[in-house]
Image (cartoon, rainbow, N blue to C red; front, side):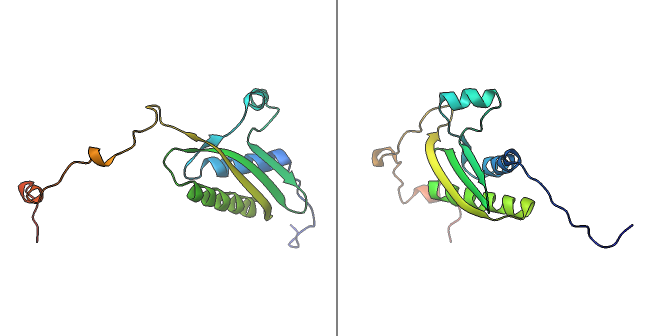
Length: 140
């Protein structure tokens, strides 16, 4: 068995990189999915497109993302999480750096119950000075 490494090369397809990015994005905090219009969704069902995800390979890896996020999460934090997760996954798996990463937040996804009602000041319960003592909580 030779002890010297043999020179060689590995070939990674754009589709493989897209799968790697997709897994990293969907595992990120607050992301509910990729945004797509009807034709893109139909092409995705046929396996001909990756809606909301464009990967370009060259000297580095360039990625464009169109995402939907959960209602009520900080959108800037979701963007930071996605950026970090994608860059880490590509660097760790392929040894390449992500040159350009563009993240578009195209929509919010609500819970099945619909949009939560907005709290108004009139809805807040009034708390009186004796309420804490009446609850049985020890106050020092």
